Image (tube, rainbow, N blue to C red; front, side, top):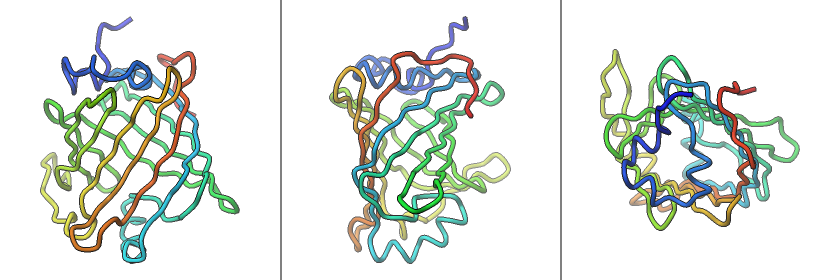
Length: 210
């Protein structure tokens, strides 16, 4: 077995041990591996504002955000490491009533100590500062970028979408809560979703995502 540490242990350094045990089990995935985990849960709310609705066509093009509203939405999230490039890949599958499953895909790459970029389509990404706070894994928006020929070019998209905040907070030994918000300085909260997830008793190393 590889001695490589989990990706987020590399990102957080010694602060990795400040995370709740269930969060550390959730993020056991190592870079340059084929580690895989799926967590299942329910989103108590998935919301966006009237102003945000105007932005959804752009968001759909780049594969960002969730275009529907709902309550108590079943969801599973597939996390996969990639052996070839060191990135972590997310496939969030929302099951809105009366609709086909909606897939929100992205991938994440470490770019420095306590810093990652989460990318959607066409190289558009959000730079995120990562911290461990009271057992929770917290991501704070540090601005948007466009990866072009290997360079991360700053994008002023935050003037439209506002500032992102994401946290995953332990509840007990097998479950955690998740919350995401996008807030605009003028128009207030544009997007939010929150839910509760269960981590499987056993995690899988070297099992590819479905």
